[in-house]
Each structure stands twice: as C-alpha cells, then as structure tokens.
Image (tube, rainbow, N blue to C red; front, top):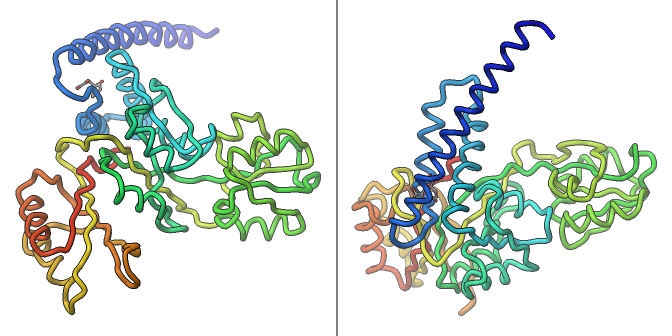
Length: 354
Ligand SMILES: O=C(O)C(=O)C[C@]1(C(=O)O)C=C[C@@H](O)C=C1
C-alpha cells in the first residue's frame, strides 16, 4: 500500500472518530429535548429547518441531497431514542409508499404495511400508528381520489408532504428479456411504461396485479416471468434488473402526504391545504377566491371532486403558500369561511425539504 493511501485512511479513521463523538453528543441533546419538550416529540417543522439549513450551508464536495439524506437518518435515529414512532403506509412491503415513508422518516420507525388507504387512515385515527404516508397525486396519472375523499371525511390533519421520483424497472429471475413469457405489474405502472413495453416486450402477456410488490413476489417464484416495479421491491425479492428506468415520462413523480392527529408548526416555508364548497351562484368561485388574491396569498393547487350530495355539486381542494398562523393566510381563510358554504382546513406543513 502506498504511503499516501495509508495516510489518507489514517485521516479518515481519525475523522470518523470525531464524527462519532459529535453524533453521540447530538443524540444526548435530542434525548434531553425529548424529556423537556411538551407535546408531540416528532417536529416536522424543526426537521425541515435543519435539512434546509444544512442544504444551504453545505460546502461540498458532497451534493446537498446526499448531506440531507445523512442528516435525515441522524434525526430519525435521534427521534428513535426519544420515542420509536409507528408509521402506517399502503403495503405490502416493497411498494413506492414504503420508499416514500422511509424517505420522509428515515429507517428508525416501526413501519406498518396495510391493505388499503382507508386502513392507513383508520390506523392513525385508532392510535395503532402515530403517522401515515399516503399518495395524493402523480405527475402522469393525476389525483389519488381515495386520499382526497378520506381527507374530507376524516378529522386527521396533514403535517407534511414529500415528492418521490418514480423509477420503474423490469425485474426478473431470468438473465435476459428473451426468456420472459409473462409480465406482472400494477395497472398504473403498466400505464406509465406502456410505450417502452410495446417497443420491447410487445408479445409478452401483461397481467395486472394488486401492487408492484406483489408483481415482484410473483416474478420471484417463476423464472419465465418478470415484473415492472421499483428498486425496493426488486431488492426485497432478489430480482435482476433487466432494464432500468423504463417509465415513459422522464419526470414521473408522486406527491405523498404525511397524516397525523395534528398538523405542523410554522417552519418559514410552509403550505396550507383546505377544502371548500361553493354556493351554486354565478360568480361564486370568484367571490370565494378574491380574499386570497387581496391578501397576497399564492394558490399552488386547485382541484375539484364531486361532493357526493347532489348531481353537479363539487368540493374544491386548494393548497396555498404560507402557514395558517401567518396573518395574511389567517385573514384570507377567515374571509373565505364567511363566504363559502363550507370550509375545512386540512393542515399547515413544511414544503418538502428533500
Ligand atoms: O428539536 C427537537 O424537537 C428534537 O427532538 C430533535 C430532533 C433532531 O434530531 O434534530 C429530533 C426529532 C424532531 O422531530 C426534531 C428534531
């Protein structure tokens, strides 16, 4: 071994020792915070501030995202010392919802895969889970209506959001595409990759199944099958990646919400989500949204859903920039409340930090 290599490794050992000593000191601080702070131990607003500050202060050469991932895990482990969290998601293990849950909470919590989005909401309401991660919209497929309907019907709040780039891979026990006779996947993933599949696997039978993870499990049992699924499912079932990133839209992304019995405190860069319904009168929508414009509140999303009560009656889901405790947002929501048939604030939460 060259002298230079030897010396560099010695330096790394020394630095690792220093990092470890500092990490232990940080963990003791977090433990003490857990004893002195009142209320919820998990503080999404504080975590978002830590991640943003470190992203801004990063001197390199590590990319901001890499630094933030490391600190996400550090905070996850520190919070685990204060209290292990239980996080519910739409299972089975290996789904994109699991990847989203781990991206947001790190690996310290106990993760609880459940059979439906309804079950996920119910688990938090019944206290079987502290938090839940649910998909709310996909850049190619649009809104996840079950989630929107449950947000309206439920007393639970939104305390966070995150975005996950959805990369679909062709996974199999087979060594190459030529040996494959059947393809399993969730219908949404088949839709997201149909152009690639038509070009490369036109003659192969496509079998829609309940989830990508289930598709990977089936492919692991039969070397003549393959699955379209994400990285996590492929690793869980030990499959070869025959082709990577086969999604047709290069920026395929799903937005997830974090659900709890409470929302988040102000972090300095927040969003507020609410649902409202309009009285059926000409110009009603303009009257309702006018206070937002007058108070300088930016709307980032507006989505309609049938109200369920009568034909052609709608509820509207809106996201605005800012926290509900900020004066402009509070004033605009108050005025909206006076004018609308119904308003429900779903929560204020930090804009996705990573
Ligand atoms: O600041 C706190 O309230 C902490 O508990 C510390 C800490 C952290 O590790 O930085 C851990 C968990 C919280 O969700 C936020 C931050």
